[in-house]
Image (cartoon, rainbow, N blue to C red):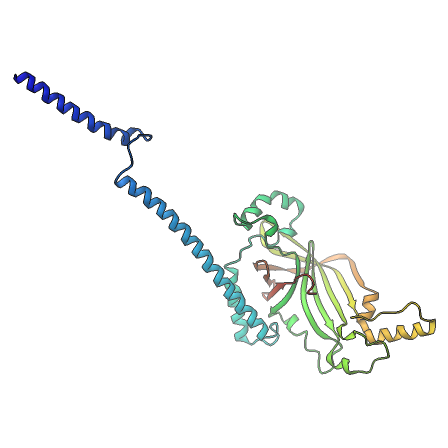
Length: 328
């Protein structure tokens, strides 16, 4: 009958509607549906995963590229330092180029708090977490962070008070050797090494006094006390606290089994042959005054595991390499 046909059609329409709702409802109200993600939704998920992977690859590629640029700049700076004899013979163009290279490295400085060892104990404690986050990547440990502490050798400077040290005339009393710093918080010691001049090696010293004396040296250390603060983490303020003079005769020794007269002759020979090096080896000098006089400041422009660049309060640059054990 007609009524029967109408009822059958209504049932078919209802079945179709129920089937459609069964597919629509999971997307609109049930995130845990058994219905698979198809079409546009699947593409969105795939695109998100692909985008994250590309972002990671781009980051790693960028990091690798920056590291390569940094290595190239450091190499160029060291070559310039060697060519200009630590900056002593640098021309105006050389100095401008050195400043450009230092400025480039400053923009890539990996160490945000290079003076952390010179904070007060309270500042270290209060600032520990910030320091840890600023100075390390996820794969590094605190012990591996670059530190200003240690011994450094000067490889380049444009400071005139340093570059004029080698002008000793035709017969200087001593020859300029290594220049550097010893950073042992709270102290920073500016070290200048004086060695036996070339002309002195040809002089006929007294018998027995010349054994190893070509390696004799005197270390002059201007001792300063440094302080820094998390509020200005790249700047160290200095105060002079004293002067050290330490000698190394390079092998000259005095025998204790000799007679008095022979011992006296030997001692004279040691003084004449070893000179100041032997004297300060036997009698190291450590002068400390009652007052600590302000001695300016310096800013750390760049610090990594093996190179340090600072700018003095007068605006001069100093590029140092870390001194490894046994290189002194």
